[in-house]
Structure formats: C-alpha cells, structure tokens
Length: 547
Image (tube, rainbow, N blue to C red; front, side, top):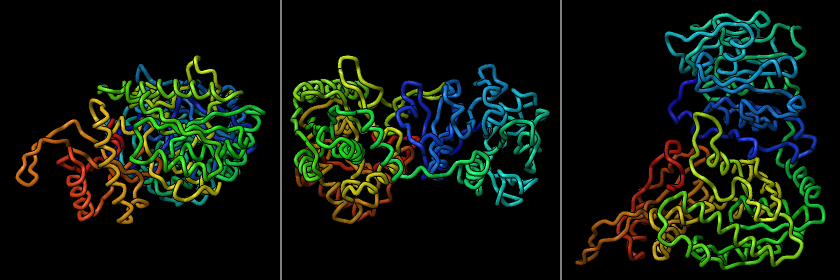
C-alpha cells in the first residue's frame, strides 16, 4: 500500500496512465519490430504508475499500461512485466488481485511496492501492517552489487519509500537482496534457477526522482534482465507509424479536422506523408477560436501542402451553446456538433472511409475512470471512439504520445518550429474559458483579452519560455472606477503554466512589470472588463483549464 505524497514531488516528472480495454493502445495497431519489443505495466491504481512508464520511455523502451485485471492475451510476447504500486493493502478485503501464476517464470517480472507485497502475499510469504508507516527517503543497503538489477548501483543508495505494509517472510522461492535500516526486505528476487525467467521486487519506488539511482535500476531491469534494445525513438516511431497508416488505409481516403495545434498538425503530417492528397483536412471555425486564428491557421496549413477546406461552422456551435453553463454539458455539445459537422463534410467527399484525429494520452487519462480510486476528471470531445452514426473508421496516429513526445516527432519530421512550439489550446476552445453561461458577447471579451495576453508574451520574449497561456473570463462582476465613471464589469483571470506533458504543471513566475502591463492593456482596451487576476495554482490539485 502506498501513501499519497505532496503533489510537488511529481512536478516536472513524466506522466502516463492506464486505460480500460476499449481505450487502451493495442500493439495490434502497430505491428512493427521495435514496438513489438515492449514492457507491459499492470496498473493497481498507483499515482506513480505513469512515472514508471515515462521512465521507460526515457530509456527508449516502448511500454503499455493495462489495468491489473486485464492482462492482454498476447502478454507472453512482451519482454517483461512490471507490477505497479497501489493505494490498497494486500490485506484489505477489497485488495486488487491478479493471478501471478500466469506470469511467474513465463517472462521477467519486476514488482514495485504493492507489486512486491502482492508477490510475497500470494506466493507463500507473509505481509503485515507496520506500526509505523514507511514514507520518505531511506538508505538502501545492497547485498550483491553483481546482481543484474544492481549493476553499477552504489552499495548504499537513497530510495523513496511510500507504503504502510511490510514483508515479514519471503516465499521459499525468493531471497532478499537489499535492506534498509528499518526493513529487512527492501528488495528481493527469485532464487537463481527456480524459474525460467527472473522475478524481482522492490519495496521502494525507483521511478520517483527521490530514488537517486532508481533510473539506473529500471535501466538494469529492461536491459540486463528483460533484454530490451532501447531503440524506440522518434525516427523509428515516424517510420513505423507511416507504414502502419499505409497498411491500414490502403487506397482509402481520410478526412481529418485540424485545430491549428501541434497535436492535429503532427497527426495530419504523419497521415499526409503516408497517403498524400487522399487526406482531406477540414479546419472548422467553431466560433470558439482565438482572435483572428481561423484565417492565419488556414494560411499556414495551405503552405504545408495540405489538401484543406475551411468551414465556418460557428453558428452550428454557438447556437447550441447559447446560455449553457455546465462544463460537461458544454463539452458534450461540442463533441456532438463536431461529429455532426464532420458527417456533413464527409458526405461532400466521395470515398472517405476514415476519420483522422489528433488524440493524445492526456486527453484520454482525464476522460476515463480507470480503477476504483480514480474518477473521471473531465471528458474530452475527441476521446472515447465514435458513434455508429458516423460511418467512418478512426485513425489516431499519436494517441500513444504525450505532448512533449508529439513535439519531438514533429521536429523530427521537419515541421516548422513556430507550429511545433505553439501553445496547447483546448479542443472545446473558449467555451471552457468562458466560465458560466456562454454568449457571443462573452466569447468576444475573452478573445480580446486573450489576444492582448498572448501578444504581450511574444513582445516580452516570454511566449516560448512558458508551456501554455490563456485568459479565462470569470462569471464575476465587480465595481471599478474609470475616470469619474463607476463601472460594474467582468473579471478576467490570466493562466500561464510550465509543464512537460500536461499531466502536472506549475504556474509560471512572470515578471511583475509584465503582469502590470498586460493588466493595464486589457482594462484600458477591452470594454466590459475592469479587473485582472493571475492564477497561481499548480496541477494537481488544480487543472490547467478552469473547466
């Protein structure tokens, strides 16, 4: 059982997540050599699971996360399996269970925290609750530095503990290989020769930065124990994905909606390289874009050689959103209208059988409740598949990537730097940056304030130093004084964050003189706004967007 940390421990780290079967990324979509070499991670609900996966990605090892009870049918083709931590105890009545006999000896295994405790508990050892929870830094004493898992590791190394159970007795087929000052079994392995493949377990978390040599231990597992070649790179991904698209689509045609963001741009570029002009791109003006964005983005895409159609669908969206205030209702309306518009546009193009989307991992994790302790944070209009009424098959070439990985792929493809470095912009657009009831007037207020904010970031050479920025119109009016006139107008919140992949974020420490200038510019030039505030919330606990 692991204990929840302060969110600051996660800041700046990589993120990934587990998915239900219908949302998970199946390797059957990507039947290529380097992607066949992968590690499976079984997720028992740990907040650290995503960090394990991201560490493996840093090592250029492809990995998939599956729910603890959804071991894929082709798991024996993997190079190894990692069992994650969990907020549960193996001693709880509702403990999460998977039959370890299915994997024991079948391929290399690494159990982490709950994975280690489950191994001991299920295979004949004894686990008990500790009188004192073991949480924080600890000194790992390595018994055998010649063991493959500890190759190059110091005899005494700092690790991070986060659990309330301890292993008292190991199964007969296992032996301890490391201790700490507080626990006699901090790491253990199957006795040599007992199984066809080695089985290792850690009571600590090698994936967090506080485990100083944890990355080296993970490298040792995937390279020296599991035999991975660490060849999953952006170049390999591009080659494999283009080949896969060609195989999938054949002589078919693809219709794809573009947003101007890096995700849809990279996804479209991959499809375009695979099938050329048989890709028709549609750029919708949903009335929720940034000020002047429709024409500028349309121009950029035409310069890239895309076969692109610009569609003014603003009335379709805004008429449905008028007066709606519930965030989830907004997202569902946008998702529905998005599909309706695409059905209409697809009907105009003969022979279209595929719909391309720029869905990425963070879209999915926030849309799907994966296991008991988790909840759906917010739905995404481009996540969860398509209804039967849209008679198009779905192709999502970057669904397995995080934002930073998408950017690396884009740069490797030679996409213009300014497009790659464009800030993320939410799929629902300004609908979720106008809090409360939607109206055309409020959207214009938000557009005008946002345009000033973004232009000043560029003027002060700050735009490329932050990850995402935008203005949020609050459903709050307050008294103000402009000259001798009393005003009662809206408040706008400026949101600016730094992040790696969008899973965690810290607010950007912008200069006071910059904030002062932006505030004055907005208040003096946007009639209807008389107050500007700056959001200094981290993610977690806040999200980047307000809705």
